[in-house]
Image (cartoon, protein in one colour):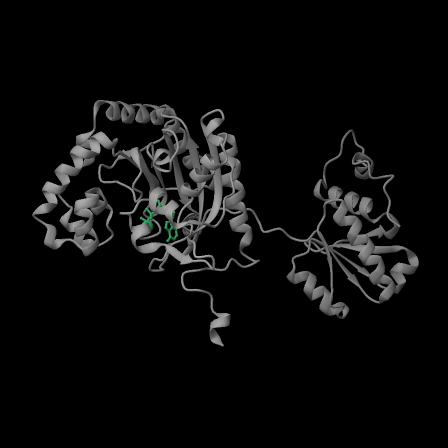
Length: 450
Ligand code: ATP
Ligand code: MG
């Protein structure tokens, strides 16, 4: 059946030859988050559907159109997480993190699921790096998470991203803004898509985030939320900008950003690239002072962002950013015959224990085939073990880069390997006219293999 060998539409495999790029990005984001004091949290891939209805918001595209929801065999309505914030917030409450010293700063790398039209940079299963900072009203925190996102982009060498920020105020400002929006759109009701007509009553601000070009056209001259901010929200926004400037982080205020989740308040922001087409938003986030309360907790002002890892990778590849080289085996042992194979197994174990990657041919092919295999694996060094090498107790370690061969004793293979490879790396380095004995340097002299 053809279906068996066809992945679900909008999903993507990461193959072994490519995964080093993902690993690099993942290690980079977690390391950056740690520098800012965020610790990883791991939550389940599915939650009660109700959590997302509340946490993401009933009037959002995500909840109305994009969720993967199903009844499990026990009749529970369950949803594959479309984003990371709701699950992290649920965990924060359920596990009592809310009673510990605030703020609680968590981060995660998670898969997310949204039923959307797949295209470049838009998948049905995608991955997010996200951070959440629970329990601080301070504008310092807004600037801090923006700074963290920026530091990730800088470390990865991404250029031409611009940061757009806005404030969408608190529920008080929102009331006045909603009234103004309703008034504006009431004469344009017939131009709006069906979803937005419904939103006009329930949450008119959502219309501004609609992807339909017709709604976007209708919204062209709509009032902007920033004109409706209360004094407190205005002051908060000014402080966020002040702290961003203190870090020399460039931004533009885009009064049109409203973001796709219902519980955003005050600061919202996006990092946008023009290099990867229409799906240019690589990171989006903001403050959600009402969310924890909405989920049944105490009032806990909080904020966070989500960064799309596929878009990030796409952007890096498009811009030709540097990735560290894919890892290569340190040593390939070509073994011929049973005795040599036994020796190879033992040497490989010792090498691996010392932290080297070491391979041999599981399929026990001919020498020619094994050397071809070593080549394809890009092994840094190879050694051939046959009957005569086992007999004499010595073999030739071959540097695959320059073809140079050096004799190596099988009984002290690992320290010999250290000696040869390190002295090759430090070829010209002599200290006081003497060559260093690297094996004694690493205390390997007494750890021999036999
Ligand atoms: P968009 O406007 O592109 O639909 P969004 O506002 O729905 O994005 P968020 O919910 O803020 O996105 O998610 C944060 C980030 O996750 C986005 O900025 C993007 O990088 C990434 N992302 C969102 N949806 C997808 C998807 N379907 N495929 C790949 N990445 C996505
Ligand atoms: Mg979306």
